[in-house]
Each structure stands twice: as C-alpha cells, then as structure tokens.
Length: 98
Image (cartoon, rainbow, N blue to C red; front, side):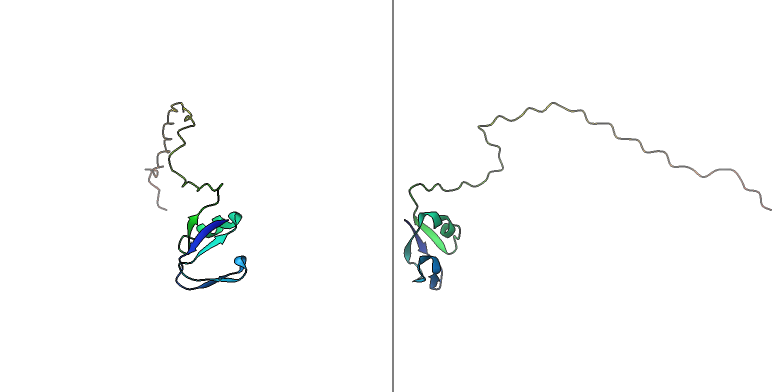
C-alpha cells in the first residue's frame, strides 16, 4: 500500500476508502494501483510513500531524445517565386462619338 497526505482545507469523505472521513493534513494508505489518481491532484494530495514499483512520470521535453540520431535532411533549393501576369492596361484608342 502507498501513503498520501490530504492537504485540502476542509475534511472530505473518500468513497474509495470505505466512505472514510479524511481530515486536513491526515496521512492515509491507498491501494498501489490508485496511487497515481491521488498524486495527480497536487493541490489536494501529496505523496508520502510511493508503491515499490512506482516510477514518477517525466515531463515531456521540447528537445529531441539524444539517444536517437537526427535524420539528415538534404538541402532542397527553394523554388523561384512565380511571376504574376502584368496588369492589363486599358486600350489607348479613342472611341468615335456619334
């Protein structure tokens, strides 16, 4: 069994623990399989004793994993910008008046 401490402000009743009333700053034992359900609420519960086989999840990093080599990319030339057609100028011919 793992242990967590309730750090909430008001007492709570936890159905999972047999409808037991938990007081602020009280330490309780929880099933190992449910440990992550408590510690994922850091504003309410804090870890006191993790399950033996528990591994804390690592935060995802924006950096690539250094164990995997980065794929080399060939330099691809950029295509020349397409030329837009010239604006059509109005005809310079005079119209005859009737």
